[in-house]
Length: 443
Image (cartoon, rainbow, N blue to C red; front, top):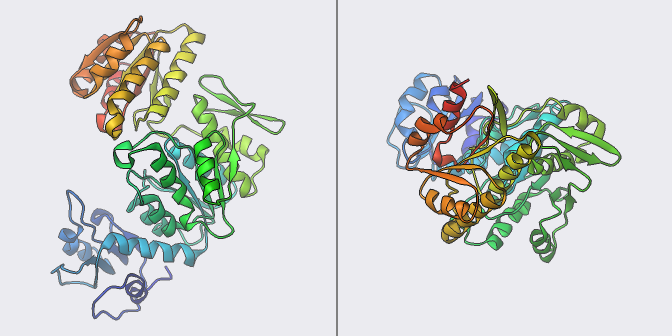
């Protein structure tokens, strides 16, 4: 790497007596993964404190470590800073500018990770690209993604998530995106934001670090978002899925005169693919090139993944949940069921972080389940009873309520029949992958 310990000290404002022009070989936040020559960030988390592992880190050959000013450890090149996480953000910004790669930043209420992964998959056929190794989209994950981007990278695709006001602006100023994308703005994380208006403002803050010659792309159907950006004198391009159509397990994306088959389920994934194409087009990718690369794209784990378990069709979409994503997923299984004649089973967890609208949005979810004529609802969580009651009101939807995910997982195979189409969806905290494992073990 082209960074020395002295340069790191200068960039982060570290207070110490170290004077070293030794070059570091990389950055690390996990003491178990440290390599000789790495710069280690001793981050203090809720459960672990990186400073407790400094002896191990230096024993493995770390070049230096950034720690808090009150750290008492002595036994290696220690750089003391006010906050190791903020220091990491400062370094990430320096590294991004030093290497000169282009940055594509994706935010939105839903579809961020899938859209990010489509963009990366398409561009990787034509550029040297990098993306987060996991769902790294916060004040730790995004800087770490930039710091672990190889020097010869041409395009780095990052994701920006937030559940409180001010987070997107902070991340955008670190990343300095060349292209910024807002997939959509829906009610999500209302507990932290309070209103859809605040969500729109927060997502729009992705422009805070946008390069002066950069481009903002948004979803054309987000009318309130467009009006807000206009009120802020922000320029933007729009994408839409006009002329495109969902075919259940796949879809057709209409680009100019070309019909492109998208190997992903649901109308929301058509929007994700269209958003991805809008970004790729800015980087010189043609519709034909996009069509060729998208053929080999695989769904992101636990995001509308489709499995065949014997004669049962199983859709795993249990990474997260908000009202818009729930509605889209229900639309997918009911559309497929109309074509196949299968019974629909919705294994439903709570939607989290919806604040004062939590109860009303779970009632609305139940009504959607009822109106879409889902045959069987297996609900778990604090608001399972509310969802189930709303779903079963004056309808033919059968409902069952479970106190815990473990209870649901232990009993799920007694409710699911061989020819069913099953959707498993809920917020990450529900841990519904346990149910997926039980269903797949039946195969």
